[in-house]
Length: 312
Image 1: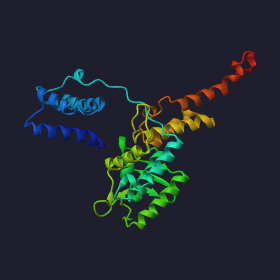
Image 2 (image 1 turned 60 degrees about the vertical axis):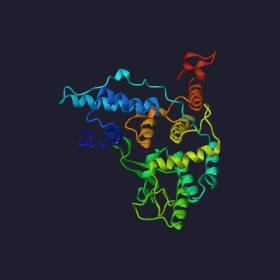
Image 3 (image 1 turned 180 degrees about the horizontal axis):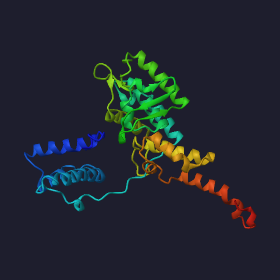
Image 4 (image 1 turned 135 degrees about the vertical axis):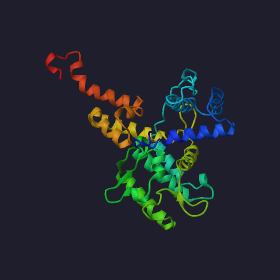
């Protein structure tokens, strides 16, 4: 039904395939309370929120199924793992990004495949300066880069949205250098060729989202950057960094932040500003910028000797 209405429902399809394979392995012809509990236990290594989200997808499917099969099993959602607070994202500083780029240029993390240096560097540059999702980066093709207008055409990603993502001058220079090195390395140059390609098992072919994730995680771990909990930052934290730094710049330059949030939501590929608020957790940098703006606005009439006419 979702696909008939134009949705791709990729994540949902993955969950159903995963459940189906589990039922086949158990030689079960239907979903029962016992097989559902066993499937839940089989996902014990996953984060509680990931497990709860998968269970809830199947729960809603069971409710839909019961419309035509009243005796079919429906799990009890009150028994699902409770949602846990998400960890505070790590916001990369400029010094952190310089360390990432320097480390990406060293062949050590990639051993026998020095071409990974170029891919890791441009991957970090693009994620840091555009806020793209990792999967969006992996799916970009050469035809998605408009060299005239210097934009990426990000096609039908999460929420089934497509968008144009303008690139900064620094990103364009890095991208042009990467494309020239890519051409010299013999990678395919037709419009449908993947932007990020590797050749460590034969001819050039594109990275998967997980493949580019493994590569960039090696770089992050090699830098020694750690969060307050002593763990390496996530790749997704580069997207948080982009959103928070955009907000901080607007505060510093006196831009109407509320008026600009829809533009940020569009740039990030969100369906609404509510989705964007997830990325704008109250960090010290934005708190300081917001306090400074309020001080500049209100200091005149908050002064002890202020009179009524001084108030805006």
